[in-house]
Length: 403
Image 1 (cartoon, rainbow, N blue to C red):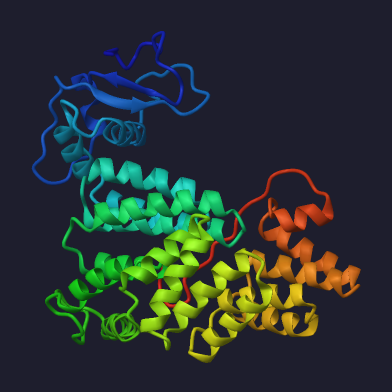
Image 2 (cartoon, rainbow, N blue to C red):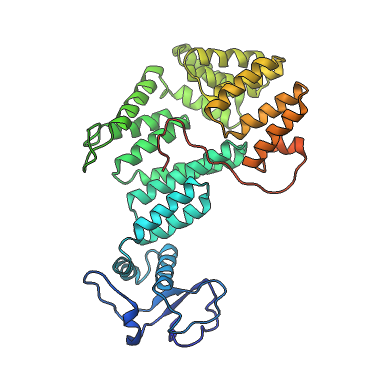
């Protein structure tokens, strides 16, 4: 759509949507360009009207309206006829814009505004297609969103979100950025895909400059290099890249507990000292309500060093069902000290307090859970509340910086 900037917006030029304007010579002073870029006044430029604006004139047009339009156009049509020209123009108008957008996306993600962060990254990717840092941050934001859903007891939504995050990591791994391989290694390790985790971490530790001091080009942080090596040793020493372990985890995760328990047993026959194997076996048994057997597996997992909030939460569930309420409470509180915003743990403490007859304390736990996640099913079932709520952002404890 071409229109003179001094006319009213024509029919079809909706406020907040894109229009395309051929810029006359009279507006050339509006564009303060950097470098050797020259405007081509024959190419129509995308412009986005602010919401609620019905028309525009030469006096109301701003560079920001053009930049917003360019970003929208590139995000929606990255291979368009004039895409290269628009990218060059954006760079000449605002050289610092990519860094500003990336910073805004990171800020939004750290505050749990995942949808906004992803929208910003889509705009940025249109401006700089295939830039490794953008692809990595998209994967990290999607993973953070999935972790938030998982920790707010939304398993089906979390699984879909994890699948989306995995696809984003695989796309990001097509680039040579070492950080991507480190972060992807952590992601796959936490998902139980230890073989893929080992592939990523091996690439990272063998990258040029891995484990060197300093912050110059090619230097990779010593701490991360050490972490990667420790994780690789854990995988190797415990046989976690074993097909039986990987399949057991996937079978139980998808509701095929009996098959998963058999595969976990096969794995433990070969690796009886693998704490994560005992956790997987206990998880399957707990899901089948075999409380005593599940408890024994989780206790064995803790004994072998698989000490994390998930293990203690699962152990507490078995203890509650067996009637060992004091022990269950102790395990949940230990887990909560390590992960204080975990809604599942808070809700389980509320359920436990009810079993112990401490109704006021239970209500306090449920209200705390609902402040973090207004849709938490356990808290809602006891409080009888309706309505929508937010989700809490949870970092991986072993990942020193999520974004």
